[in-house]
Amino acid sequence: MTEQATVWRMHAHDREGTFYDLGPRRWVELHGLNHPIVEVTVRLVADDDPAATHWGWIQTGAGEPTMIWPNWPCFMTCFHYGPRAEEEAGKGRTVRLAVTTTGGTNG
Image (cartoon, rainbow, N blue to C red):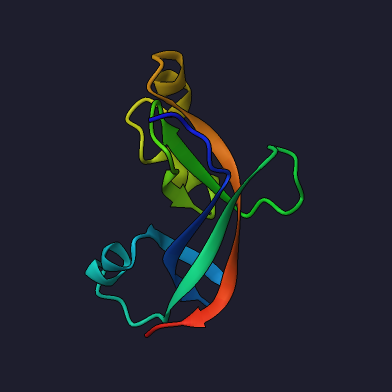
């Protein structure tokens, strides 16, 4: 599968306006947290775009980002040797994302 989309619909925990645990609704539910689950729009943006709110990872050949975090330290901990080593090994790439609520609250 080739990467084509630049906008995705996902779910996330809304922790006072910051979105965590992004992915399919079931993934968010599995965390078992009391924060509201909301539908979000995740948009691929340029590294220097002021709208960027999160870092994510797009695995080579994948169609959507994973390991989406609103801060760099949490994102970096997803990789034993840091994301740069994984990029150099051809496993994927780090991307900047703008995450906004769609207005739907589901829990």
